[in-house]
Every structure is written in C-alpha cells, then in structure tokens.
Image 1 (cartoon, rainbow, N blue to C red):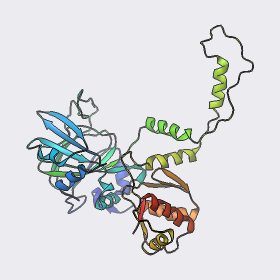
Image 2 (cartoon, one colour):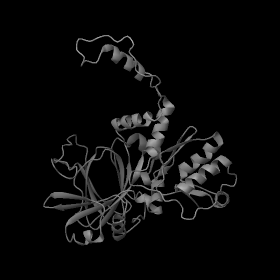
Image 3 (cartoon, rainbow, N blue to C red):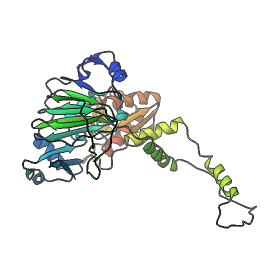
Image 4 (cartoon, rainbow, N blue to C red):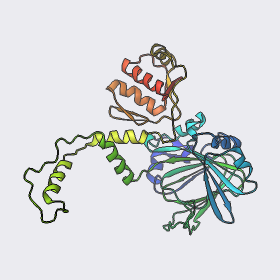
Length: 374
C-alpha cells in the first residue's frame, strides 16, 4: 500500500485515503494512460437494449430534462436526432470481462463497498444536469472529452417535480475538461455537472454507502428467520378493566420481557452484512451450465486450470465465514484461506491440492452458475 499509484496521481493509497477519501475531490490527469474506453457508443447502446440490463435515457430540451428507463430498442436512439441526450448503463462489469478487470484497479477499497461500473455516452452537449450523489465515485474519461463542474456547496435544494435530482441553484466552484485517461474522484454529496464537449463516454466506478435506516430495516428482516422466543402470552391473573379498549400495563410488561429476550452479537451482524452486501440486485440472474461436468471431471478441471467467479458474482468473507451471492458458509481455517484468495482476486490458478470440502462447495457454486472453471 506504500507504492505511489499513477491511478491516484502519484499518491500512495494511504495518502489518498487520509487526505481525500470521503473528504474532498481529486483531479487526476492520465490516471489510466492510453485509456480510450472498453466499448464504443453503439456497443453501449446495444447493451442498453439487452434484456435484464439496467439502463436509463436522459434527454434535455429547452432546459428541461426527461427520463426513460429500459427496456429500450435501437429505434429509440435513432429517433433522438440532434436532441441533447445521455444513455447510462449500470453494471457493465457484469457483462464485460474487461470492465471487471478495470474494477480490480480499485481493489484498495474493500469489495463490500463496491457497487458497480456504470458507463455513459452522450453526444456534444449531453448530460444529466447538476446533481449530487450519496456515494463515492471515480469518473474515468474514456472516448472523447467531458467538462466537469463541481461545487461543495451546502445548498442541496432540488428542482421541484423534476424526473431527476437536479440542483435548483448550482454554483460552480471549479471546472475542468477531462480527456481520455483522466479521472475525477468525488466524495458523497459533492455537487457536480458533466457536459459532453464532443461524443464522449465516461466510466463511473461507484461505491455504495447504505443508510443506517436501510441497514437496520434489513437486519430486522435477517433476524426474523433466525430468532426463537419460546412460550406464549398468558394471563391467569387477569383482572377486569374499567376501559376494555385499553392495553393494560401488565400486557405491555409481559410482552416487553419477551421481546427483550431477542439477542444478537457481533457475529450475527457480520453474517448479516456478508449476506446483505453480497446479495445480487433483483434484476440479476445466474445461468446454470447447460451441460454440467460431473463432480469428478469438475475437480480434475480446477486442479489443472483453476476457477473464476462469474462476472455477476459477489463474494465476501469474515473470520471463517464465506458469503457468496447472499449465501453464508462456515468453513475451516485452511479452506477459508483458499476461498478468501478467490474472493480477493475473483479467480484462482490451478488448485492442485484442493481439499474435499472446498471442492464440494466449489462444485455447488458451479452448478448454481456462480463460478466457472478456467
């Protein structure tokens, strides 16, 4: 972590985390030298027209914005003419190996924080208006040039009844034109406005920041299948009440005592986070192999060539627990070391000395479509 990275403008990872991460913007010229993107505009539009892909189309006319969501057809884009517009495609790393490889450059941020790679294309003048996000993002310029205007203003009042979260009073404090390979890091709530200077594509590496309310709600959902409170309400000493519609103090007290027996510890919270943060988004589905290998042939294959995660898989771990796409698995110390390496690198080389327990778990994931042999 002490090496200076061109990706971070010559900063070390620790310098970046201490001085910029969640604190202030950072412009990095030639963060990825010679980078010109991973796909062209037509390929991105084709991806936006693919089933189960999350995509949005933003158009701008006379200062007003309109928003459409996928599914799209190619004709939807042909009909735009000279309109100012932008197409944004989420989760490109789920469909393009080169996009997944690009995300590996950002592994100095824990996988549990990674959301996805969004790619946008806009002809000259296109953009989505001045706005702010509640998450961290690296904006890497691919093909073309984009002008970025930013502000760390406190006023985050939005335009009423707009289909997008457009800032009502955006006051530009800094601006730059980014060329291919340039990158801008923005912390949460930093207002920004990107305007295409020509036909341009931007690669947005986003990092999720779940609200505590969201985590608390989902933790309670997680607990409901894992708690057991024995006994039933009973009131053998029931007394008459002046007002039968009132809930009595005795009933409240007994119920409070029962609910107070619900307990959780740090391991429960860690397992919840592992399952919740690795859970695939609702639109993501996995395809089982059409002609699956037998378990014996699968083991031979991974012993020779190794294994890799499916592009859509999310794998996390914590002290003896492995989390794969929302599922939790308790493993032994030696097995944990092997599987953690898979989670870290998203692939493993030849597994010549593969333990039975690891082989069986990998085979289960292979049948589910979560992993594939190299």
